[in-house]
Length: 378
Image (cartoon, rainbow, N blue to C red; front, side, top):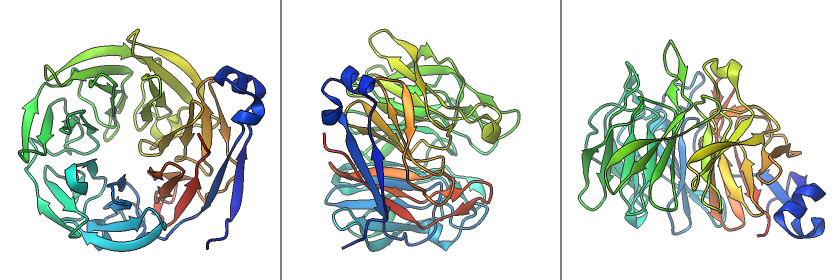
């Protein structure tokens, strides 16, 4: 049985508690964090995904100082979500830095794009945790790094934009797991990389922000678009107050979309604290408050909690909780041992999540550490 290294105690303010309903005692909650299993290799710009049957997969990523590739960039760590122990490993077809992934039926995972052998790749592969191996998937229409990827309500995968090694793209395509094929769909109104793609309750997808973060002159977009799978087209949506890329986004219980942090064109020097909410009914963005700390490279580091709160785990030396009702973030009293970028966070079950990997800002040093996060009741 593990020894808990430290407790992170979050007591909500009385005003926020009353706004959410109930007393302070009813709304007070405790998040407990402890060291998790060591990954099979240091990883950053990797992916972490839950695939059912009690398995979490840590996939690819950079594994060497400077966020360089190595043989372990072609490996997959298979983690038992119940015991939170490393239970096995798998093999990709290529060493991928910053791949994108999406869950497929039967526990398989679509792994696409990213950097292979120093170039942005157009290849895809399908990893099966049951065999620990990948098979080649269809080639995309173009190389893509950091495209906007979303699993549609019918199980198909939307892949939009991204950086092709020369510039950002606006074209989009859809992977159909039933046929195993990729097909072109409508194009984005603006070329963008580093955007978020979030499924709405009605089946549309909100693509927010992004821009041109990979080469000069950098561009951070405030514009957003809605993809309608019924028509296969993108249409302009609301405009955010701030242009941002490398941010995070998730859907709230009421169906609205929360957009969190990121950076402006100054990249490391332009990290954002601001949070915005896309009001789906009104079709516009509303200022939603500020994080306790500015954070970017957090796209895979958010988790919705009970009580209209969001765990923002990546991008600094400690996680924080953002309270949607009060529009404020509160830093947890837990030291992650570094200021980590490109961490990944995934829910293992109703009460537990795993935070894994990332690289140390400044030194660009990937870590093999992970952290088990015990979530509040709700």
